[in-house]
Image (cartoon, rainbow, N blue to C red; front, side, top):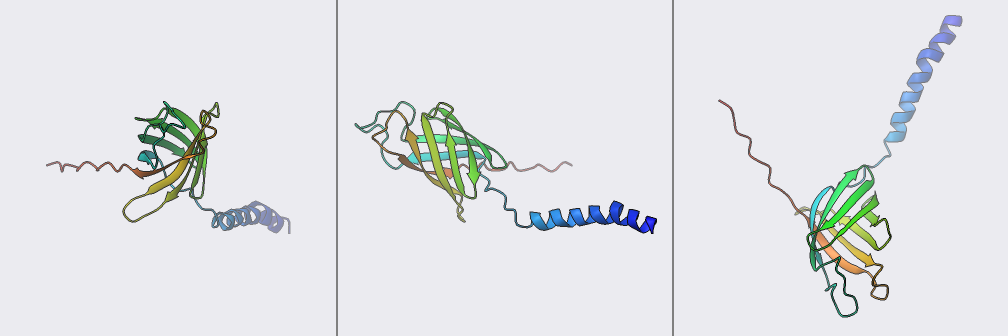
Length: 149
């Protein structure tokens, strides 16, 4: 009897735990993959008379580093900012540490390539409202592997 009880405790309970974790994990969905460089274009001129910003130009590059649902976002080439954020399903939210800029976007999966549609809100332009943009992912061609002889 003691051997059966020990067997149930030492083998049965861990097996039950493994199956419970597997069953719970079946419902998990990974966040959408957005890491890489994106070419973005403003849908309107950010340098319009109501808002002159040195931080965002009409065309800029986004570089995103991703670890799970956490995101580091770098605006460059036409914009200047470093942001931290999160991905929830297909929605991205990021902001600068000083809260001077907020980035919101939604990832749109398409056969011809992923696309972002979103907005940037600049603290220096409170009456302007969000600046809308769209972005496409830069796909770098993979190098052709040479065959050794």
